Image (tube, rainbow, N blue to C red):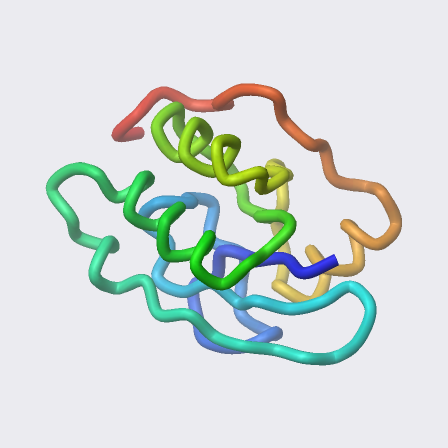
Length: 119
């Protein structure tokens, strides 16, 4: 499975960012092999509004199957869901740890936003 993990830094040892739309980076990786790609999200980090939707569009363009993050707001959830991307929240630790938790089935796939917008 190809997934995008919200990250505070540009590598697999970076901490998971608890925010989806305003995450500084996305680390795109596979649960099947060690391929990695870093997607910069700084254009949305300080966006006055629309960060969730724009970040979802950014990630959808990378053809991911899933997003792993700490939390996901309503607009981002709607955009990701419309793109057919699964959303797993409650992630913490490093990007590498989050990927392993997904592999082991330890992350919760959500069926709605788990925080209000602009939290």
